[in-house]
Image (cartoon, rainbow, N blue to C red; front, side, top):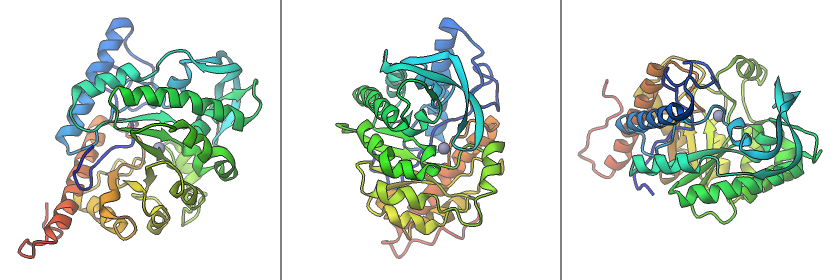
Length: 357
Ligand code: ZN
């Protein structure tokens, strides 16, 4: 793993090139087919790695260039789910969507992302991170006509995710991340079985493990919901104490421009914190100083060796130039703070905070 202080990382998605899928569209269908699609996804992944590397991102992700949706693409590769039989359900208690139906025992028919992860591994020597959906968020994206128990279905999914995670680890993935935005909504379930299911998913792994909990992409259903949450967003207060005691190594959370009180991360003390210092709901590009300022505030509540500067969520909905400029801001902002921290022992070093760009 990386020994860089404040290693930067992104949560997940980056915009896809326009020749691969329609730009600025979440979950856009592929523009290519067959072998051309395979090649197109790999080329897009190469670009994602190249841009992260040159812009100062230390822990490299695939930018979700090979998947259409962060939950559905995994589910499409499972048995027991009928994609023709659709029901309308309320997702995360927030918006209605037509979803596939669980019609029988779920099983993992084949490795889902393992080849893609091996390809990512072949493109870089940097530490790599791969994201999978979390069990609760998967359950919340389906209609279950078979188990008729969210807890049982989550437990089944956790077993399948564990199979996938072990193979990702064998393919050379250093950090395996589970996306659980549902942890910010279903607090009783988080307590009753959500964290336990997540721990089932990471059982036996030697790779580091992360959970990403956010307030969602900057789409209307999410921004409308956020408007109802008041001046202080304290949702993390429900899951953080449980995660602090859990087997999960890293917690990824939203901070920049959000109403999450920074001191909530104190609850996680001892865990690694992937702190969102880049807003994904606003085209305005953060300055490196703004990023450094956010990180500096976080350091009151997390030890420097445990801080991973990151984004609030995925960057897929942005125009490409905006997303890439935000990566640069993240890399440069972390560098400012890294210099401050390592220069602290050297009294002759000038303060770097006030230097204009
Ligand atoms: Zn997110």
